Length: 328
Image (cartoon, rainbow, N blue to C red; front, side, top):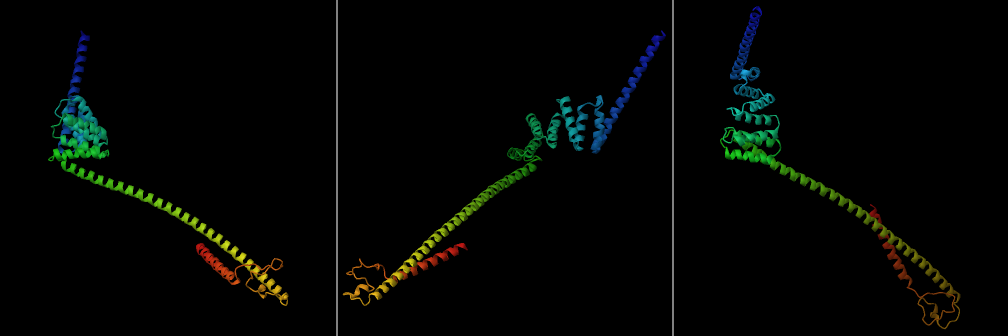
């Protein structure tokens, strides 16, 4: 009987403790939630985030209201990573609730803010597909365009911005979309100019290189041509010099021959010949020199030979002048 009474007393004490703890836990949960509401209403987002995060840890506060306010506080406090994590919790835990479309939109926007552009496009596209008549539809389109723009997909982004401007001219995102369109158009013009500049620059460099190449070839060819002309001139000059020397040798031979002829004439000056024209300057066609030891060739007169030598010397001097001019 005593043991039974002790057991009852023990169980009663346990239940009393549980009741006290439950009341205490409920009071703490309610206190955290109330503190979160006060900070939320005052716009003190950091304090609201702290209190609501603490409140959400209690089972009785695990509901759509607490989490939606928590997500809003985190977004306003720029704690985007925590807000994204809580969006995932909300979407998994509270489907078919009044805040679900807003949280779904917020997830896509947070992904964009975190630089997850491909994931943002998918999340926001899902929102647009499910909630075409939602007030946030044009906003979702805008952040799809922004994700495309940030991913350098300018043509696709322009299509989204054009749709916002055309279909939702009253949307708060219409002016921003128009600005983005102008930016893309300006960028397109700049890229075309840069492309043309690049092409023109490359063409200029190519033309310049080709010009310099042709100039080198020309100079090379000119040098070769000059060398060739110099060589030709030198050869001609050598030929002229040789001709002058040959003519001088012939002249010397003519002079010696004439001297020999004169000597012969003086030797036979008193010898009676019937024809005194045999030893004249003009050859006598009737004279017979077959048996004579004196060779008197029938050649161009002396004066003409001298004139030819003079002309050849002038040509040689002209060739030398050309050669000296080319060397400069």
